[in-house]
Image (cartoon, rainbow, N blue to C red):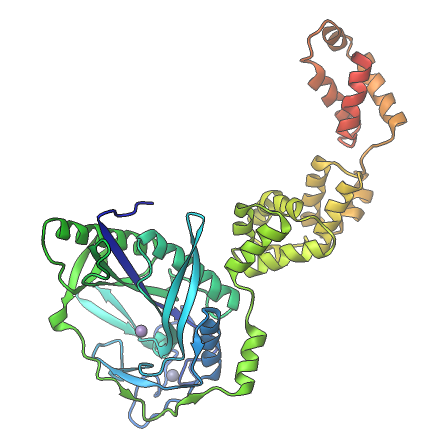
Length: 476
Ligand code: ZN
Ligand code: MN
């Protein structure tokens, strides 16, 4: 990662997160992505005269839950305001949002940059309604109002980030958080998470520079690319003795650069005023108690705990901790007495391969946590070795049965009986005189071959360590 030397760069983010609720924020219309355009609409979300909004409590709960997870001070009373602007995707000509009293303020989120934890302050979280979606096709523009009124949580950070990479990491961490909390799918491809950013560059130590806004970033990669582009652009202007113009820019993904959208003179004046049709929202003890029951261990805390208390590697913790359901599954397996590092190795290796093949998640696969632990127990007890364990694992997926049952049914139990093994070894030595001679003459190469012959004769069940020891004893 590059760090500017003569200059400081500052990046703040405004991230919009669509909340997954059954219905929209102020009406009963279905809140769902991908439906036939303009089918989930009604007089309220279309802003028809005389219609009145009523607040979706579930949207409010989910918004507060995120604010709580981001360590914000939660407002005991918050207000809705009208943010006025004219655009075809906004049928009411105003967006109901929060301005003077947002629901959460003064929070923070921790991110890990190059192995170092960095705390980024959260200025505020506020709840608002999404606008419709414009579709531009040639010289025609269409609008889909299904999205109008989708509950939208806006999270505003302080300008505590310094580079595009850090912004990208923050977005990934926030995505994990909202998914862990079950309040959003955080899917940037479908617009469930969208990002605007402000960037400024200034002489080192001189504080914030003149900020430029970069809008409508719809992938974390574009966030990184556009911010680094902006930092470079502004640095060059300062290097040349120029002044950065305060303006709003857009990322042009075809040209890999930001372009001017509007200058400050044309900036919007939103004329906020209180929404007269919605009373202020007041939290109750029940509402706050409900949040307590819904809060979960945050993804970063969980990754740290998995590494520090269960001894698994950072990379394994990242894979396992990416989704809450997977991390839960992992810890369930451990509840049956399995050992953390062993489960992690299997889970991120052979188990993951099978899951990829079947397209299932661990939790919905035939490999229940109990079966997983049983498989590892069979190995620990010396009943099967690693290779047989892999065979049994595949059979668990295929037959949906317990590993112990499969082992018994298929006769896969490891051969540990030294008498039986000795017989197999002697037979193999008799059958392969050439190899035996070679080894006795000092060429150890055929050792692997003989080993393979014994394993084959045992149907793969011989305990490899014992076989090796016996061969060595015979051949010196
Ligand atoms: Zn509606
Ligand atoms: Mn907003």
